[in-house]
Amino acid sequence: MATDYASTVEAADPYCLRAGEAKALLAGHPWRRFAVLGDSVASGVGDPIDGYATMGWTDRIAAELRFHRPDLEYLNLGERDLRAAQVRERQLAPARAFGPDLALVACGGNDALRPRYDAEAVDRDLAAIITALMEMGAAVVTISVVAVADYPAFPAWFRPVATERMRLLARHTNKVAAAFRTIHADLSEHPIGSLPQEQLLSRDGLHANARSHAICAAEAIRSIGARLGNTFTPPVRR
Image 1 (tube, rainbow, N blue to C red):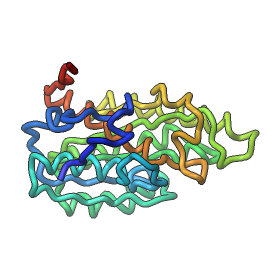
Image 2 (spheres, rainbow, N blue to C red):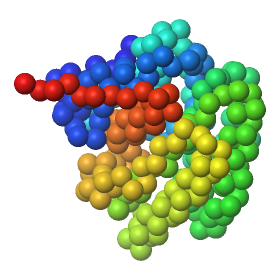
Image 3 (cartoon, rainbow, N blue to C red):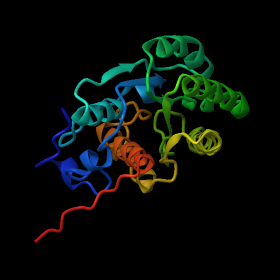
């Protein structure tokens, strides 16, 4: 069942989905088997927040897809702490065995936050994953996540480095997405990135909280809707 946003804090959040928006944007979608590959971003790690649905962003996408196709099969292979090469090595085979016609890939953050970040190597792994999925006929969704202004999980000296690394990862991911014409959601410059971290991050100071998951899902669904050629017009309030 699609998420019910009525009478919640989420319903009034200007960056989240409006009532009926996902239904309109995903109308007529053809997909029946949805697979997710990646790290903790893909798996949905994050703290709950009052007023927001307690669902990871990829789970939200699956729920909204099921509104139109209740028989949709969903497989989330996301696993925290994996680097892009490990996602390719561990998850590509089971994803292909699942036979998705829609796949979402979210990885590279764990590479970007390491001392010897090789952006080109991550690009190659991401490209190989996308290629393998597209070769079997799957439409592929990619994402560049929000580059938060401050990451309390790290020592003070590394925090600006972490932000710049995530921006660099986003620039590279954007280029790979453009080259393969994936369904891409670029949140790297989203205005929420400048908000106080407690509004966006979990208590660990690194992973997204429920609000961030809601916003990521909204932007991904909007990108999918745009690829489908669908639009949404909010109802006029009287």
